[in-house]
Image 1 (cartoon, rainbow, N blue to C red):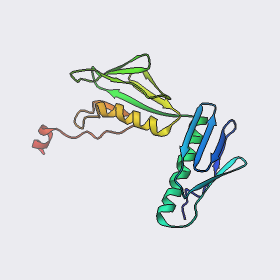
Image 2: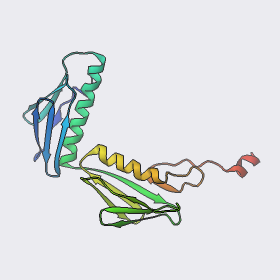
Image 3: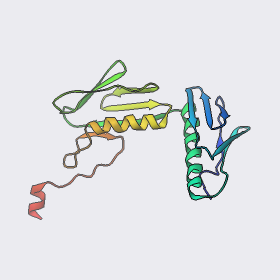
Image 4: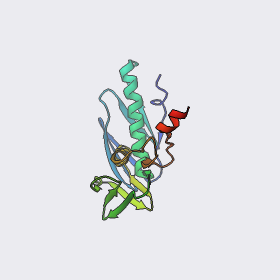
Length: 180
């Protein structure tokens, strides 16, 4: 039994969910999202809840059942509260500055890197923090990963761009290995 797929999704106040065959439309105070769920899976709105159902208990169908439920739940949460990922810049001379919607990163490369957010995603720069906000969890996570990949944390010095709260394990250098 899919434990995740069998959970009901509560619809908060101000959010409406419309289902037409495999198309799910979710409208809320922060915006509108559309989602297409895989064919054998069905979703049913029951009052203030959404139930996701599957036709049989085959293993691939069970996997799609849990996935579909999670995607719908993320859309409902996104249009009601939104998602945010924060990245921190660590290192002397590492900077980020905002010009309109774009963010320009100076992270000890031979050139500056300009990050342009896709529609529906907002980037804010505050001191050494970069906040990525939006209603679509997949787009927010993807953009945060792309910003991190510009200069990931160095294993020897710890400098670079990392998620806020991420622990970076610092390796000992050559001289520390020689003495041991």
